[in-house]
Length: 200
Image (tube, rainbow, N blue to C red; front, side, top):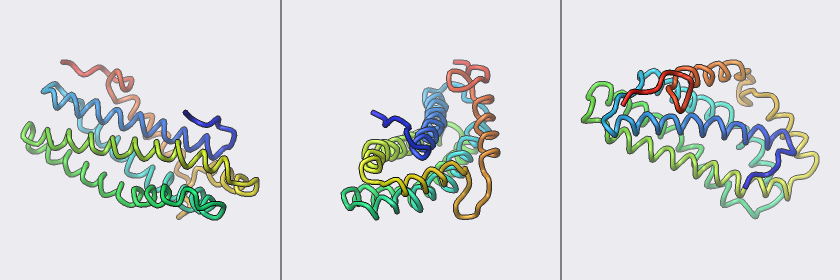
């Protein structure tokens, strides 16, 4: 069960998770279509999704959590340190999984059916990895933040999460990622997006 978005930071994290979930569900849909021997969409749809999950979590979402949410939570309580340790390790390993996905997709493009199952298996493994990751944040970290963080913590977090900037470089990513997400929605076929349905 989700917390009410009574802080900007919580709302932004939950909205980020919703978008990432939509993109990952889209990847599963396409990979499963391939696994069933059906016709898949243009590989550019996969590549747009991979670009989104590669750049957005790694350059915007995760750094904010590491530098602000997790750090502030550690300073207020040790109750969720094990969960934070696990999430930080997942942040570090998530990028490697995305590179594996890119490689598996390229191999599928060159080898066709022979490389379909490894690609499908990797997509499913990544989906489980990321859905478990988001669940841990929403079911453990955010409730702990709601319990232990103080007004000055939320003031900082709400400010930083509202910026929609990469805290490592200060670059404004919002417009670019909005455009990319819109592209994914428009080119992905139904029922994932607004594009034409994939024929059976």
